[in-house]
Length: 154
Image (cartoon, rainbow, N blue to C red; front, side, top):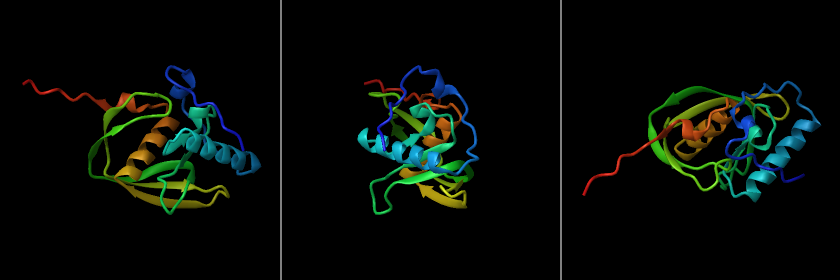
């Protein structure tokens, strides 16, 4: 396993659309292991392959709970409900934070490392993480969806 360099700010790869994974092989296993190690080393809760310069539809996340880290290959949102507006940050935009409107819950269909299809439903934080990381696969950063809150006059 290896720590990969996280692409930041204006790196053009962050704005590209990732390709679907078609080979479920040892290279994919290594990519996922490296992504999880890189995410943990950076104290992140999620990481998408483009953030380390790989244009593949792969995300990893870890809410640091009993479920541990998880990898989703070719994830796609199949259902979303509700609304939440919370602050987000991004490992590719260090030191920045902004409020983003996201669904309160999402259901995501994905493949595992063996190419088997599953679904996961996330609410609140997990829903935000899933949406944020899937956006990366389409070249979208949270700042594209950031809501500017007006300050109240005193």
